[in-house]
Length: 357
Picture 1 (spheres, rainbow, N blue to C red):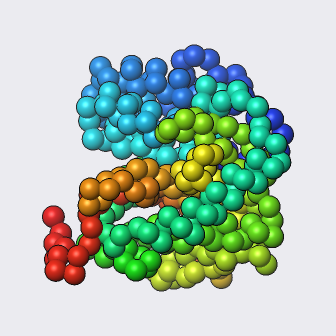
Picture 2 (picture 1 turned 90 degrees about the horizontal axis):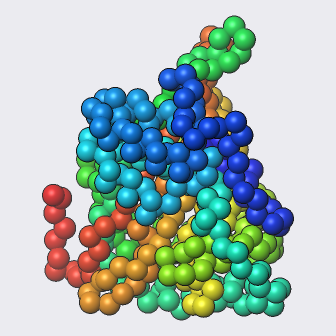
């Protein structure tokens, strides 16, 4: 689960190796309890699960709690090793819950940090990218596929403790995302999922981060392996008073937007200013019968639209954690996780009719 990712988003200290204290090469804690594992150990578990039934493979995977981030390419590779739909879903949940953690040491580049002037140039290129490149995106539409996972904990026992369960797939939702004239519209096919709601993945959410950090400058964090070479990673922290960011939670059956402070990190191509990865982790959000906070991760990649290459969102993870009051001193804690994939990009023309599959 992703609780281990909270509070890691601001540090100017040198990166430390992710540690899983006391974890042997093979994971052998009691079944049902969260089991700490590295990405390498997850790979070993998947290898072992290949020879088992889908049901048994799920039992091997679903209670793992990664101590470091599982990258999208590695998640795709490991998923190919599994034959069953349920074990693939369990792997997706485990991997998605790790996206707010530090990457494995092998994905952190041993490269000298740029000086202050070079850091400012990289951030300036990202700002210019948002001002000049994003507005040139054509009117387009894409398919958004969302897999929704849920983990609901039991009520508190006599010791005030909750018993967590595993994240399990609750449903699959599809929608068409239209981007026209710089505005984003989502057309859901059927019922739309609950949980944390995010908008503006094609540019506005990126602009909010850049705007908010004019008052709170970003801090250098380090170099990571990016899709095209070295990726410069900066961290930021924005208090509520300076924030233009809002998250929406379902409260009383209806989504309620709350402006909140947040922290996170942004991955930038140092040469072009292209934004490749964004993580936002909100401050706690409170309602009359609800409390929680929401995290999102967005990855951007090259897609071909109308014969030209553009950088657009390709994958996202949103996770909301919190608790709600059920009455009679009963409180239930929960985790909601959405895995989002954007695919099927096309140029939008007024004569085109978009039909569901």
